Every structure is written in C-alpha cells, then in structure tokens.
Length: 151
Image 1 (cartoon, rainbow, N blue to C red):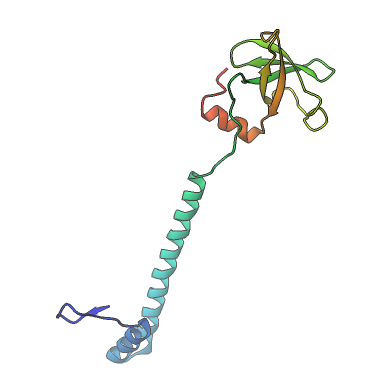
Image 2: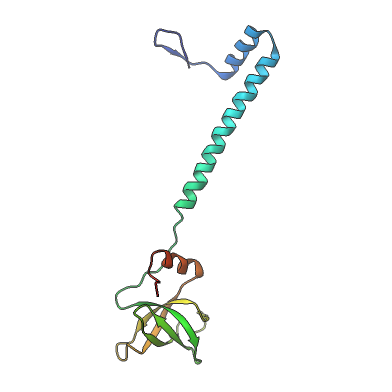
C-alpha cells in the first residue's frame, strides 16, 4: 500500500514496485537486490511462524491418562510372586498382594517397577487387590509431574 498524502492507500504489487525501482535507479542490479531482500524477509517471517507453531505444539502436548476413580489406588510393582500375583507398593503406604484378573491375564504383561492402578478387594482390602490398568512409561512420567506418584 502506498499512501499518496490524501489518506487514500493505493495498492501496489511487489512486481510493480521492483520495476519502478529498476527504472528510477537505471540498473537491474538494484532490482535484484530488492528482490533478494524481499525474499529474505518473507522466508524469515515464514521461518518464525514455523518455529512458533512447533513451540506451541510442544507446549500443548496432551497425554491421555486413566485417572484413579473412587476406590482405586496407584501403585508400583515391587516383586512378582508367581501365579499372576505380585507385591505392589501403594500410594497409601501399604504393601498389597495383587493379582491380574482372568480377563487381563494374557493381554497384560507386567514387570517390576511398572506403575499400575489397583482396586482393593471389599474383604481384606488392606492386604489384597486386583490390577485394573498398567500405565506406560510416558503416562507414569505424566503422573509424576502431577505429583500423583510421590511415594
């Protein structure tokens, strides 16, 4: 846009502007320098936009994590006893013997140090529980950042 003093902006194409500069200076070199400088400005602006988009994508990373419902507790597997049973250190400070229910037995593989979601039994709930869900390492790190795994 070129302002001619009457507060009326006149739209000008870049090619017209470059042609005007080439005619007024009398050399093609000035026109090429202007083209190069304009291209660098456009490229730098696009690069800044791309960098900003990457930063916002990194900051808005969303992780889907199953949160404990009422009656469920987070825990970390301390040792595997055998027979699909293991000892789990729970977030309430208790050590429980947990089992993998039959519906998860072949699909859920756990190791020592894995983070799990457990549901204590209605009877003997202080010493026994069922494993409801196993968290991936990324989900476990997310829970640690939220201070839900602070034991």
